Amino acid sequence: MRARIRVVVAKPGLDGHDRGAKVVARALRDAGMEVVYTGLHQTPEQIVETAVQEDADAIGLSVLSGAHMTLFRRVLELLAERDAADIVVFGGGIIPDGDIAELASLGVARIFTPGATTASIVEWVRANVATPVA
Image (cartoon, rainbow, N blue to C red; front, side, top):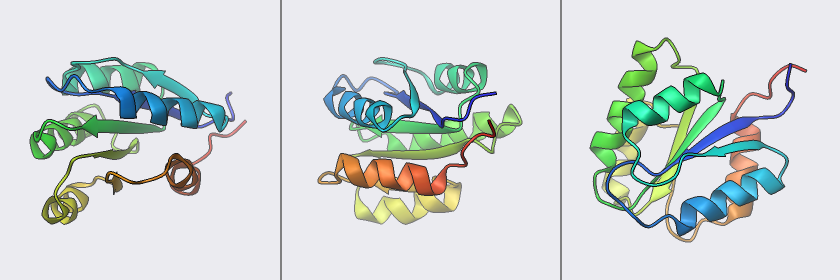
């Protein structure tokens, strides 16, 4: 068994800006977590398939395209369909404050907006994603 948190970091949709996702993925990795970065232009189906196949504890979505409501909702629906709703979903990007509460009501555990530090993201993941049993 593994004893480290495993996180899938994904860039869903047509958004081609992945610098932030790569910075977060590196910070999580440097903090001792296992990180799978899916690359650009992933569909919700591809992201959930990766998370299930990799036995992920969390999915971090980076969305800058404005399609955050649709993309987060679909990932959560697919996780429920796959009996994998225990995978914690969090994310970040250009997301209006007014949408954050609605995303939370859908089941998104946390949204990080521009200006969030990598340290705060690492700290949140450590505190809110269950550590696997060794």
